[in-house]
Image 1: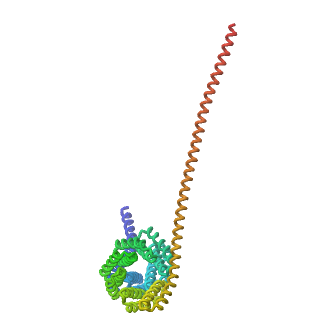
Image 2: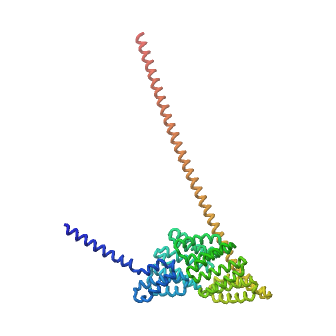
Image 3: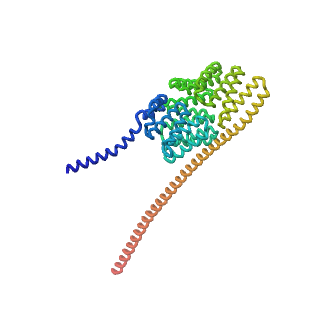
Length: 475
C-alpha cells in the first residue's frame, strides 16, 4: 500500500513538473535585458536605446518571436525620443515579420506606425492604421489598446478640423479609461483632452485636464510625456495672459529637457520662452531665446515647425522695428508651409497673410497690404463660419443635455408623486378596513345586546304568564 502511495505521489510530481515547464519557458521567453527595456523605456528612453543597440549584433540568431518583441520595444523607444522616421521603419519591419498574424502585438505595431506617420504629417495614412488598431482591439477585447487607438483617431480628427467627432470620441475614451482605472491610459487621455481643449480655445478647462495628466505622469515617472504636457500647459497660460505662470512652466520644461538631454524639448522650451517674452514686451530676451531655439530646429525634421519658427521670429523682428528682417523670416515661413500637404494648416496660412499685410503697410506698400488683407479676411470668414457652427453645435448639445436632465428630474418627481399616491391609496384602504372592522364589531356588540334584551324580555313574559296561571289555579 505504501509503495502504491509513493508511486502515485511520484506520478503527480512528474505531472506538475511537466505542466510547470511551459509556464517557466514562457516567463523566460524574453531575456532580462529586453524585460528591462520594456519596464524602463518610458522613464529612460536614451539608456534603453543603448541597451537595444548593444544587443543588435545577435539579432539574426534569435527566434522570430524575439525579433518581433525587440522591434516593438525599439519602436516605442524611438517614439519617446521623437525619432519618428526610425519609428516608422522599425514598425514596418515588425509588421512584415508578423505577416498575416493578428494579435495584440499587431495592434501595438499599428499604433506605432500610425503615430510615426502622424508626426510626419501623413494624416490619412496614420488614420488608416489607427482605425485598423481600434477595430482589432475591439474584436480581441483589448480595452487599453482600444482606448489608445481611439485617442489617436481623435487627434487626427482634431487636426482635420473635425472637432465635434474628436470631442465625442475623446469623451468616450475618457469615460472608458475611468472604468479601466489604468494610470497610463488615464494620464494619456487627460493630456489629449487638454490639447484638444487648447485647440478649441477653452484654456481654463484645458489647464485642468493637463494638470491631471502631469500628476499622472509624475506618478509613473514618465518625464518625456510630462514635458509634452508642460509645453501645452505653458501655452495655455500664455493665451490667458498669465505670463509669469507660462514662463515658470517653460522654465520647468527647459530644466527637464536639459536633464534628459532632449533636443526636441530643448527647442520647444526656448521657443515658448521667446514667444512669452514677446507677448510680455521683453523683446531683447525674446530674440535671444528664439536664436537659442534655432540651434535645435534641424533635429525636429518638421517642415511645419520650421514654418512656425520663422513666423514667430518675424513677429519678434517686427516688434523690434526691423521690417526687412521680418519680411525675410516670413518668406521662409511661407516657403516651408507650402511644402506641407495638410489641409488643416489653413489657420497658419491666414496668419502668415495677416502678418504679410502688416509688413507691407509698415513699408508703405499699401496696395499690396490691402490685397493681402482682403485675402486674409475672406479666408478668416470661412474659418469663423466653421467655428460658429461648432459653437452652435456645442450649445445645442448643452441644451439637449439640460433638457434631458430636466426630463429626468420631472420623471423622478412624477415617480415620487405616483409613489405618494399609492401610499395614500394604501392608507385609505387600510382605514376602510379599519372602519369596516369597527362597524362589524359594533354591530356584533349591538346584536348581542339586542338578543340578550330579547331573551330577557321573553323570560319576563314567560314568568308573568306562569304567575297568572298559578293565580288562576289558586282562585
